[in-house]
Length: 99
Image (cartoon, rainbow, N blue to C red; front, side, top):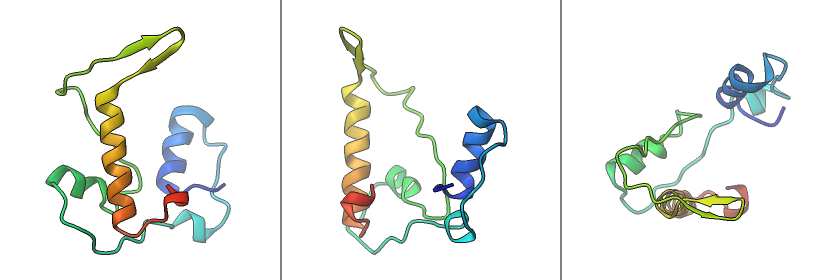
């Protein structure tokens, strides 16, 4: 009930079997409000497109060095991608506590 329509549709298709709905039209049609920040690379510009509520980033072509520590699996390359996206969102006016 706290997710926009795009995320809700994906969640319903993958997990919830159309049992989830948006809490209000305000939430349903919500999208990022980005300010002009520093220039970003072309892939990051696609990620920051406020009209796209759900995106997937294909990392198949990147070197994927997953590490395992007991039951934990991590991927430093993908972590760097998430950090870069987070920094760009903050630089474009999204409050860090909203990310």
